[in-house]
Length: 354
Image (cartoon, rainbow, N blue to C red; front, side, top):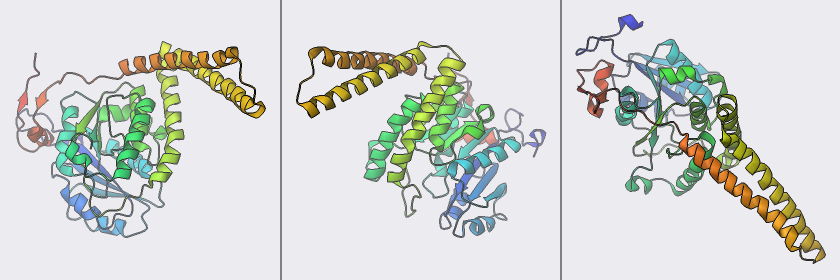
């Protein structure tokens, strides 16, 4: 369907907005039909990317094609990872000229009832990217498995450092939405293909200075089994996050803009490395020989560490100040009226507050 063929908004007469939901699906034969059926009817396109499942996921989705208008199935011959599935879905959504694209996992842990709330900061013009946050309410934390909770907290802190979005939490929450403008500006070939997809998206969005909204919503835990293994994640994620951090700092604070943040980080890293190596060697030598290090040697090891800590702390403070801020709303739309912007009924649109 072309732009000029869109259903017009009954109140403004303008073409209705269009949203595409991308569902990466791998080995979710039991859950996928329920997930697709729960997607609201005001969602124009439902794109299921079947990522080389070993069960009957592909057959289960194909059986739904005649029941759901706008449903498409895109198949990967082999498993390429959730990030690769999303890149495939993003590119198809761009071809369909969707105004917004939402990621909805195929295992049923993301309730489509929160779709309007996730899209609200985007349709109001306050943000370019929105993500769910399962840490918004204490009652929801009690329901989260403890291993997943603490792993998520650790990865969230590392992602704050890697991405530069210090105000967002629950970095591994894959319930995300993005505008067509932001999606078009991202180099999709650089998006992480595996489970670090969400972290990679945040890092790339920060380089382009797009605003990100954190939307509180409860998690859904049922009988589904996660394909993500915590021990593998904790071993594989840190190197990826370090690379994302270095790439972001280089692009944003060296290539796109010369900033003291890069100088502070570089000097702090060099001084800290010297202090650790010099101090560690003399500490080991003192243990081996039994001779205590001189006060001058200790000072020469400690002073660079203190200077490094001060420089790195300054860099972090400046980086926090550079976090892209959410904008004042272009228009105000209540959450129940969000579907109206996509051609369902007439929205109640309020003018922005002065």
